[in-house]
Image (cartoon, rainbow, N blue to C red):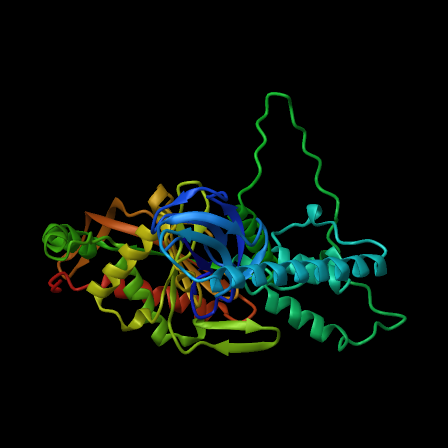
Length: 436
């Protein structure tokens, strides 16, 4: 018999660690190659860790909620065949190191708890915090009130390890409060008490999903961070409607892909951002960061009601065929939970299709740290005035609303309105004879 180490695989260039959320196999269980052994969560997506071999789970080196570094051994799998004891010795060393580190961590936590009058009560937290973030907060004596004010850089505003280390580094550099400081605006002092909820015996109570908590926190944080303003415009997409109906069957037969409206809209948005780079920015305190790449996020609803935003990187460099393939691939894998962590990172502008559910238009919340988001309304067949050299007449046209939400701190009404108008112009000027 031989032992094989199951390591946490690399999940993207910017992902260094993950939290174990569930063990799918117990010690002694038989495992087949490519079968999932455990579930993990990063700051971006949830995923599974499969076994590369057939064997039996011999040892689990970490528990649920433990944070594991990429490349670190998380389990030992026993396989058929001869093998040296090196792996077993290595696993024992790893286990001992892990136990020693855990003991040291417990001691540090005890010291930190003794130094603080009251440790943070994470049960009252308004957003999700990983075990690593909680440990750092306890060790550094960071109260829950202080923790809640830290701006998270992870998905849906989640506080990451780097955010915590940066906060700890800069804590001592904060200027001391003056004796007679100016009173804070009421909005800065939010009530900590939860709003009472009347629950009857026949009511059903369920806990929000982990992703749901992150979304709720991110949406609330965005509304508190950005000064949301909306611009709306109606667009005649009759040419696009007729063109798609004409080519969608042949396109699917030739490419094996569905031809939806989404890639056409995403192409128009990417082209417009090139003309209005002031939309492709992010805000860091008082600094404005103009992003070089145009990375479009496309909000996708999941079956359980949660929302995820996969990202089309360098969207302006894709033709319509490339955009269609990318949109379909990301949407399909988002629905089955197979996105890679890097595929939900780096977005610079987001598009959401509220028309999928019949909404005519919406007022979407900006996906921080971006400064704009475009909602696509439902396409409707409506009567419209058609102007011709011979006179005006009433005809049937396919129309939709575009709703542009933007951050009025850095995007004024002129830029926000001109941007969505240019998107509309590109869609209305779509060439009905365009090759596909």
